[in-house]
Length: 114
Length: 115
Picture 1 (tube, helix red, strand yellow):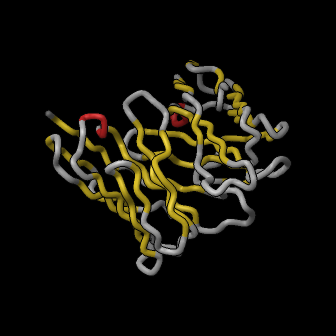
Picture 2 (picture 1 turned 135 degrees about the horizontal axis):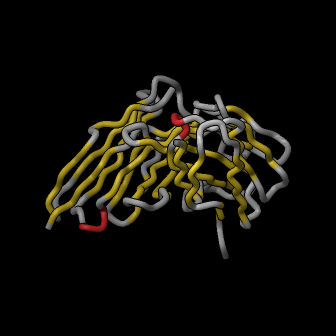
């Protein structure tokens, strides 16, 4: 039930782009993206609800393909501050208005060098 | 504005000992969660509570119990700690009802070692 993330690790130079993928074996209600820096708690980046919308946050954006049960996170013109581990979280069903059972992938470690 | 507060931050237990990890949020959130994080495994859901008075199992509930004491507090109990429960534990919350973006807010984590 855990979503699969790829790649497991990415090494970039400042200014380069990266794509992180997240795929599920089950139909999804929503996909969340979080970033965690070493020794810190995960921090929310964005949420995509079923409907296929694409969201953006500075130079970080994401898409959600319901039919393929996949989401991708796009990091453009990477900065040193982008370094960290990125997790997707998937929600299969929502019984109420609140976020329900959120299952995370194993993460993608991103390192950006000068 | 404290957000999500977890206690303790560090704990060392001997095998067989019991303990309770405390979590409280001051954002009037409905949903609360307990995750554990191990190297290479990502964040794995132990238990969650979608609303006050309800709790549900996550991916790895064995060896744990939870209590949603009230809307603010969600505790995680290890009845008989085992070395396999050595991990970093994160509490999180989301809501309240009516918000468009139901993102999770995480506490700072508890580093637990079981010897």
